[in-house]
Amino acid sequence: MISSKTLKRLTERVLRRIGLEPLIYHYVCRKNLRRYSENDRAFLAANPGMILPPPQLRFDVIACSSAEYYVTTGKKMAEQIQSVIRKWGSPDTRVVCEWGCGPGRILFALEALDTGKAMEFIGSDMFAPSIQWAQSVPDCRIAFHLNNMEPPLSLADSSVDFVYAVSVFTHLSESLSRTWFQEIMRILKPGGVFWFSTHSGQQHLSELSPTQQKKLEQGQFVAIPSWHNGSQMYTGIHCPALMKDIITASGAELLEHQPGGNNTFQDAWIVRKIKIQTPSPAPVA
Ligand SMILES: C[S@@+](CC[C@H](N)C(=O)[O-])C[C@H]1O[C@@H](n2cnc3c(N)ncnc32)[C@H](O)[C@@H]1O
Image (cartoon, rainbow, N blue to C red; front, side, top):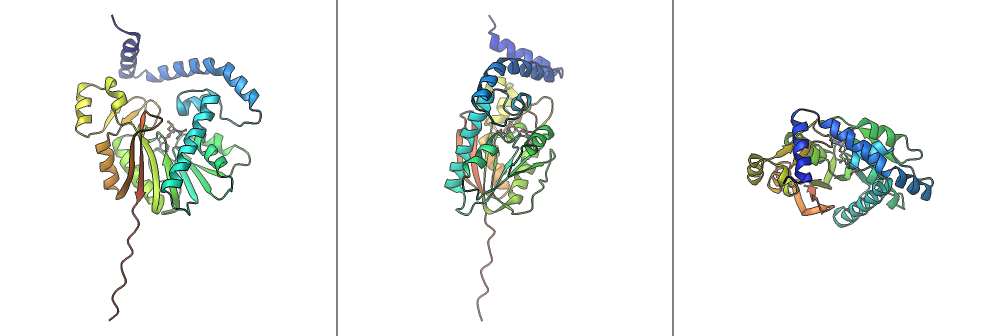
């Protein structure tokens, strides 16, 4: 007897093969919006004045339109990022950038934690509706930028103290991951810190073919492709060996690797841009 979970997986695989996966996305999204509409009304009534992106944008970014879930998970993640900045950032950390920020689920919460208003916040994403919405929020001191699928970001070399990217590499191919990693190193100041999350593959084993599982074991990149790179529907898997190679190739220093460190289902990584070595002064003759 075939279980409903297996049947769902098989149906998804077939729809993916014949290019109809966007249909699943729209169906699941509509269902989700209906499911949470009543809860959302109650949550917003209990929190008057709270500014939130529309339900469709919330779904686009975390695959769940619930207003309460959007707010509570954003706050929790912001607290996690704040503790990483405190642990690994320099005491002078001032400029913080989220790459792949969506409509600012985490960034708005992180800005609210900066009660002294000492920091400068920047968010960048390639999805225009998210950035347009974030830019429309009144009295906002976060600078939101739209970027393309490929680098560059509209930020100067060595201009940022701390960068984070929550669930962004998880939607990119290996080659885009490598170029974006270099780009983040370009905008970081020497000694600056980068926190990011990846799929290690352990959670997706049942969705991978035997060939893909073998590739994963050999430290190679594996994708569950669909629709387009960068979308919620494209899953990029960077096993730890591959991620370590990307980090080393960019000349960064690995500070921490936490399996399951992002919400238990993604690995969290913390790296530092190596300080530029200043040549020692020539000996006085
Ligand atoms: C799963 S969502 C996470 C959004 C946000 N970090 C959060 O946790 O609320 C992934 C985000 O990465 C963005 N993204 C994907 N590829 C990107 C790229 N090449 N440059 C910038 N953003 C990208 C998507 O548009 C989307 O907003």
